[in-house]
Amino acid sequence: MKVLIDSSGLPFSLAHGGATTQVVETVNALREIGVDVEYARWWDSHQHGDLIHVFGTPSKAYIDFARAKRIPVINTTLFTETCNRSPENLRIQGLMVSALLKIPAIPPWGAIRSQLKWSSYKACDLNIVGLNVEADVLRKVYSVPDEKIKLIPLGLSQHFLKASHGEQLSDSLITTGTITERKRSLELATMAKAAKVPVHFIGKPYDEDGAYWKSFKALIDDKYVMHTPHTESVDEMVRLLKQSKGYILYSDYENWCLSAHEAIACGIPILIPDQPWSRELFGDQASYLLPGKIDENTLRLKTFYDSIPSLKAPDISLYSWNDVARQLVATYEGILQTPSS
Image (cartoon, rainbow, N blue to C red; front, side, top):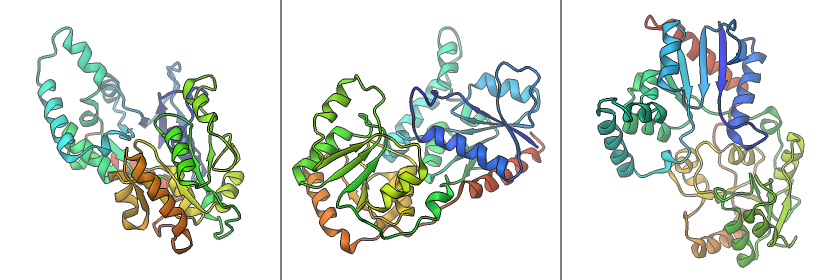
């Protein structure tokens, strides 16, 4: 079995983030357990694969071309924003998508519809997601049947899984991720100052000349708002997490959230937005912030910080990337054995 991995997202040099980490770690783990896997080379007409796993939704035409060559296509899309919408909003979105797809594909609507890729989820051989709330998006919005949906978790490197607990040498909380609007870094820094709770930000901006970064940088006082640029060293990230009192995240939305799992692996309690993704993963074992309510969340931040001696990291299952790779291999083999493939 030869697997081609196709990721057509933004280059890591332009926009660093968890999506790229997922692709790279998945490929490395598949290779480590002996799978013949390559990144798809769009320019190479001689490259062969038995199956294509696309990270990022392929077009319907892409799937049709692959099917003509009897190559199954598996899709992994991160429904980061969509999975956190209310059930009613998903229902309405699903009705709109269904109605629009019934409109005949005459110009210019046909070209517009193909670019939206709404039909791709149902057309591909399988959709792999990490959460039930993401599976609900596929079901309710894109009418994908259950047999075309598979839940497989995301993994962690062994550096995190083997991390010991309890060093907590710092008095500060830690937050990791890009300094950007979606992570609400500026609002969190403002809350930290107001609550007089030290927060250590680990991450870099997309644009060091941008207004958002300059506004955030002005709040750095090395007392309540501390900043360290993103570190490429996993060992250093483990050290920073282990010495922190707790982890905080204040982003607009997430799905699996690798950084929260990394913090849990290092044994520290977490304070995160109260949203569908977080409730599914952590239930009542996490402390929660209310999306968009800065005054209330400033109080919750202070309460969390003061309560840390009595709090624990959530006791949840953590997976290695090799665990993920083994589940993927079983899934790939099942797809290849399906007659329609």
